[in-house]
Image 1 (tube, rainbow over the protein chains, first blue to last red):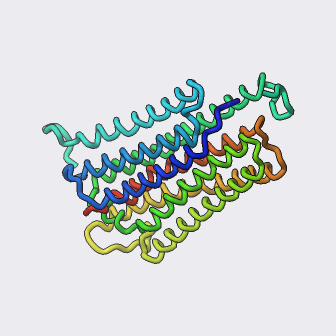
Image 2 (cartoon, each protein chain N blue to C red):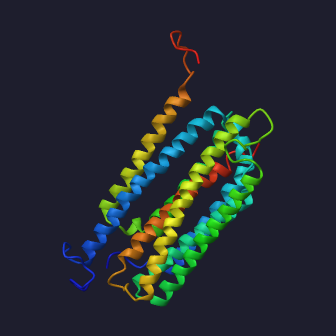
Length: 107
Length: 215
């Protein structure tokens, strides 16, 4: 068959984990974890939990764990290109003003 | 595996090949959707770095209770969707119909709560445009936050509406007994779409609702 039938208990377990992680991310958001002006520790915690939740959905609900290697390559390529979009964009905006540039336009 | 049943299109060798091709095609489409939503997220991140105080102010005006409830509703709908696919795979028509109806209901509850939130924003004059009103120094860029909020959640809600339409189509076919343990590809592929829309919300929720709760 195309992919094995996922046990009911596993689906319910994944759902319970998703609910717990949602509670966790809401709870954590009320504490200032530090990390300077942008509260990077809070951002990092929120992103980590969101990625964990997304992984659970993609691997189990979307059956990627049981899918062909080709599917893995497709999904990986999508995530990789998304990472390029975010990382290169933020590498520009976050690093502005790190070094003095006497010839630069002031805006 | 039943070879060349009426459900296998002539260009495929067998049902397995057809299933693989269909799911892979859906994934290719979902990758374009990652890029689509990715652009909105990238824009949001750039502007929140430049105007963190104003975006924090805007975020604190969102209803965290309704946002959290909606997150739970959507996660629940993903579970019922997964169970609908599982029922289809097992050739269980009753389960299939039940879980498709549950998924549709939860999807509509999500849209209803979203509509309620939108209505509150109109009442509070927090919708960008000539009627936007917010006291304090951050009004201009808080308005930009709400532009992002309505664009991102609006496009997400549009995807939800399409998803509910897909579910209605699946439900009609399921009631007619079109799907069996040998052939349930449309259920699986629509499930991929539904779960993807859930994943987008998993990232939208902390990005919009949780960025400034600690301050």
